Length: 275
Image (tube, rainbow, N blue to C red; front, side):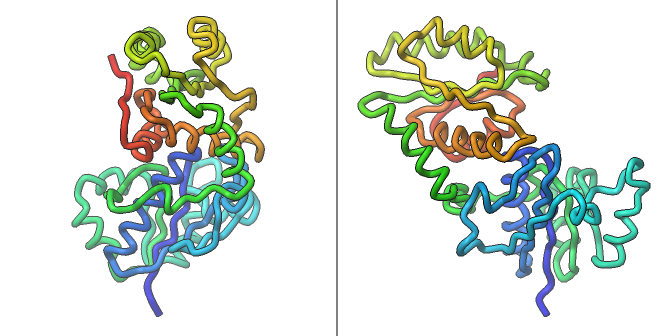
């Protein structure tokens, strides 16, 4: 029987997607299969299959809720480290965030550690190079979400579209290193040099949304829907925002935001605001 990697992707949407890409690339390199245990929790309370098509995936997805996914949670004080006992009885080895952080800059060591062993990995980072994986081909939005993405993209017909993602609220590093003034200056540059430019703005800060909209008026398009990790509709909106931004002509993102980093990778044309 083929050895396999079982991945429990952690964190929000972009973190989980990047972790899956890493695990898939690692599994392919090691000649192993990949199974993803997608656990709904407060960080992402939505099924994988409600966001992305599951047909023809190169890995198996097991949808788990908080109760049946408990066994695959990261061992920590609040769960009395009980999960570690279960995981150690089922897998030949278990790698957690601290483990893959130490190994992510030494891919050959990671391969040697994993190859030939049924391995459980719980991570929300890019822990193995996945440059050869096409994100858009791997993660295909459901028909429902693709229709929403198409509708938003249609609003830009005839314009040169610059996507803008301004990460705020609880991300103090993004707030400090990607100041609002940097986004405004870059948008002003585009506005002065391209008369047909328009901006698709995604932000988790309503004040920022109002400020940018007031400055650039009819040049700015935004969504009226809330992006929320704790609801299914909120996570669907996150996917729509991500792929709409990825389909723009140019992308401007926030520093220290996995959401921005993944969009830039998917878009292939853009920059991160960093003072």
